[in-house]
Image (tube, rainbow, N blue to C red; front, side, top):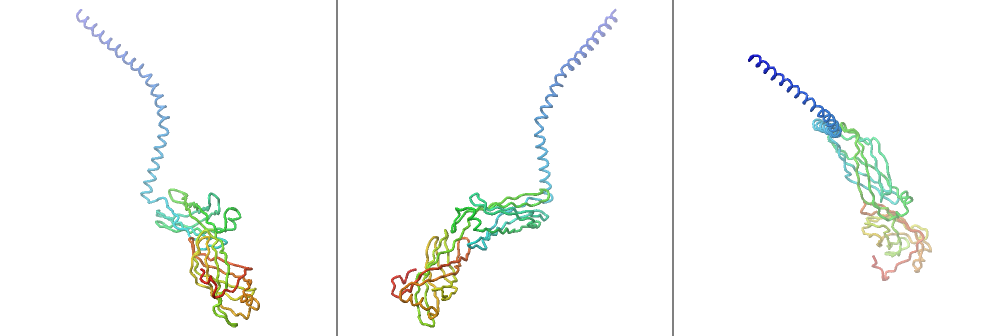
Length: 337
C-alpha cells in the first residue's frame, strides 16, 4: 500500500508539473500575440520615419566616397576671378573694353572652357550681352588669364535710354558665367560679378578768342592764338597735346601739333596759347579787317590728347563760323589764362 501510495504521489506531481508546463506555454503563446502585432506596427512606423534618414545616409556616404576619390586622384573645382578691366580705346563713338578673368585649375588634367556668357547692365538696364563659345582650355595644375573683349557703342545706348547724356558717367555691373567641364564633377558654372563706372565722353567746346601778333611781315608773320577750351564732361581732362588747323575767311593759315600740359576741370574752362606762323599776303581783306579792329570769320579743327580717370582719350574739337579779332599789346587782358 505504501508503494502504491508513493507511486500515486509521484504520478500526481508529474501530472501537476505537466499541467504547469502547459499553462506556461499557453501563457507565453497568449502574451506573444500582442507583441507580434505591436512589433509589426512599430516596424512599419520606424520604416516610415527612417526612410528619409536612410536616404540622407546614402547621400552622405556617396559624398564621402566622392571626397575620398577627389583626395586620392586630386580632382577639385576650378576657381575664377575678374582680375582687371581695361579701356584700351575710348572715343566719342564707342568704348572698347577688355575684361581679364583669371582661372585656376587644380586638376591633374586640362579642363575645357565650354562657354563664356556675359552681360553688362547699368541700373538694371541691359547695355550689352554676348556668348563666347569654345573659349579654350585651362592647363592641368595651371592658371590662365582669359580676355573677354566687348565694345559699347554710345549711340546705341543713348538711343535706347534717353536719360543717358553725353559727358555723363554711368555705373555698370558686369556679370560673367564661365562654363567648364571637369572630370568627376561634370559641367560647372562659375558666376562672376564686377561693378564700376564708365564715361560717355563729349567733345570740348573751343573758341578762338583773339590773335596776338608777335612778329609781322608780309612774307612771314608769327602770331599767338588765344584759345578757350571748355570741358563739357563730368570728369577732368588733363591736356597733354593737341593738333589743329585754322582758317581765316576760308583761307588756311596753317596748323601744327603742340605739346601742352594743362588741366581742364569738369564743366570748367581753360585757356591755351597756340603759336602759329603764316604769310599775311595770302589773306587779302581778312587780315586788314583784323588790323582795323573788325572781326573776321574763322574755323578751327583738331584733336586734343587728354588723360582722364578712365584712361587716355583723343577727343576731336571743331569750331565753324566763329568771329575773332586782333589783340593789341596794350590790351588789359594780356595775362588772362
